[in-house]
Length: 103
Image 1 (cartoon, rainbow, N blue to C red):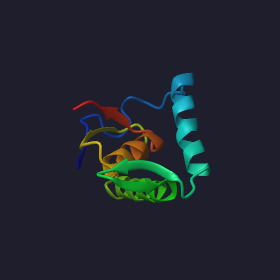
Image 2: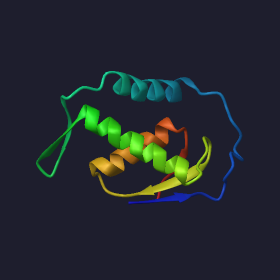
Image 3: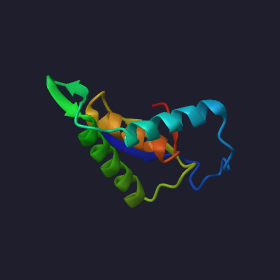
Image 4: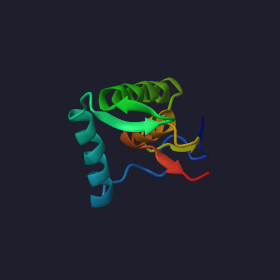
């Protein structure tokens, strides 16, 4: 999995207010985070992943975004499959309020 920072770094798009669609997606991510338990969240290659483990992966991905110097409003491209790690990174990018461009 690779993450690339887009050409519009540093929030050149400006910080806009969140519309209802954005807010409900962000609220959904926050609700999943608050209610994480040891129940199955997803299954990959016949291996179940618990909600709490998934949230830990999201946190590690968010830390990686911070280490790479991303800021809310930056443009990023996520190239990956449908693995738990790629999904974790996608959720972290949404939570971090990055602009995710299709690849």
